[in-house]
Image (cartoon, rainbow, N blue to C red; front, side, top):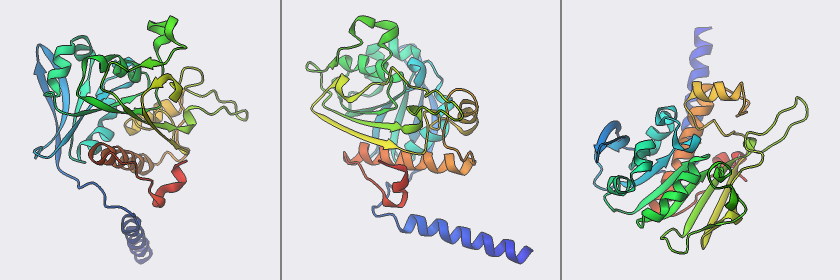
Length: 272
């Protein structure tokens, strides 16, 4: 039995290495990173920081729940994103209320916004104060103007007076699917932010077939959501979530560094 287990382990490891060897593009080099707390203008915020950040790019990350959800729920994904040599500044309530501090966090350097769920509306609202943001990555974007600006819900966001000129939208398809047997209501049925609501010159979209809205969260938080109101990937093996976070961070990291969207045939069954 021990020999069989050792043989099985060896086959699994070889398969894992083959998965990486078959990748048709060079992955973004991984670097060591750490999570730190910073203070600027009486605002405390979390930052994921590569140890050697001399050649790093940077992003502002807006969490779900209109950015009220703590960034700690995204810790595994944000760590992996930072390992792609990216400084990740997590926007919280204090930074949202202080646009001067929010701009100062970026040191007025080129910055990409990454936003999840209804954090998108918060991110879009902040763009008017961030002339160093030209690109955004939107993960299952939700238009929360139904709560704050209902009169403009049917109108597109206007960025003609801002620097934003490109968005990359990534939708986890299980967030939008209805199911009859057993019955399941999608997590984002009515208020998803669609391409026609964002008036920018360049728009890109990618659908992830097997995953749901909350699979971006750390494993146990995603499991709670999967078992309650937000269905995710059927296979709840922690390694599936780990692989998803690695793939998603690689995809976004490549976009931040190189302005490219890489479709990897090794995992093409995830992608439309």
